[in-house]
Length: 436
Image (tube, rainbow, N blue to C red; front, side, top):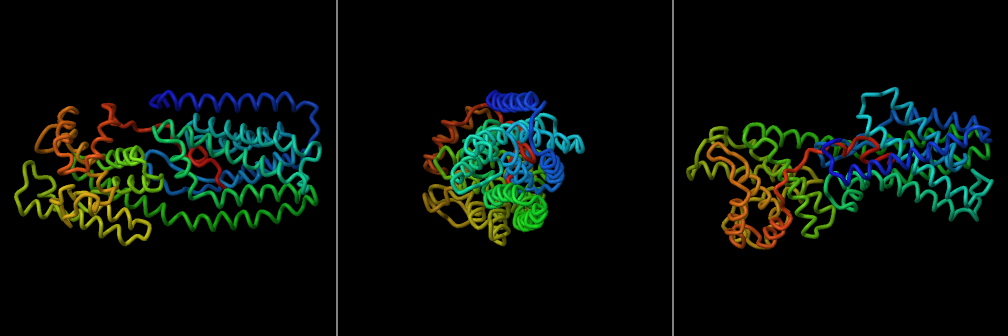
């Protein structure tokens, strides 16, 4: 928490304060309030259970987990069926109980943020729905369809937006980039869940016993979504672990690939690449040296310059890395960048002698990030170069070894501050809140 930048602290504090205001208002409202106590109790208990059905989603970040739960359907039902203040108590109460039952699953400040953003999302959406539905809560008559859509959109925007904003501030990345990457796997399931929540409220208003039927599609959607995302998550985890093992073979390059990936992603965004392409650039940077598993230790760890044969042997790692990744359909573009990250702007690189814009843009970005990190890191054959000397060498070889535009943008945006290991970019709801 202390390592976060001020902007992330400010977002966290704003959301927590807003959530506490919502909770205080709900507690003041509670004495003497008239509402369906049975519905509130059932929704609270169901939401507690929903928080135990978590699904880990594919994440490009080593320092945070992304999970999704099915609680949003129940929170939507709560603000459609109950007064906004009671819906807030259902959301905060169910999350608080789940937190108490699993107190060590995540740090307190993540849990507090999650509970607060749920309170804000549910409370504001409930106020919108109350304004449109009047005293007919739970009744989704055709003339109220517009209000229903506005309320659902408000819940979606606050639930996903608050989380993406704090992550963006912590990562130092654009909000829209974080939002797209954080929600690209979850949007179909998310909208399916919130509309199931709307259906659940209508069923309760018509015949409460019929809500039991909704548990079946909710669980079925959860299982189907789980099978869809687990393959990518497991593949990413295995490849990241292999990349980490490659870095660990050489003490001097430990965490090198992670730093290159993060440099590369931010540089891709500065160059105007769309979020998906910037994400693939991160993956390519993160995995650019994965082919070093095919390089002998005697060459990889040699404490001095390589001879011609050794350089040829070392050059195999680009081909090996690209070939490994080509076997995964989701990594075709990543494989091309990994294969080409030692090509040169003047065509004198390897393995294919590509030149200029023939080199994939992700590979050109990684080449600069890789070179800078290598120069500013101590290696067996030399100590780390000062930042100013690394800058001088990048400038000296731009237009020869590296894409001059990539070098210029990198040097314009690069600071002396090291990349931080983020503490908050979170798990569960604090990454993709309840994209259920």
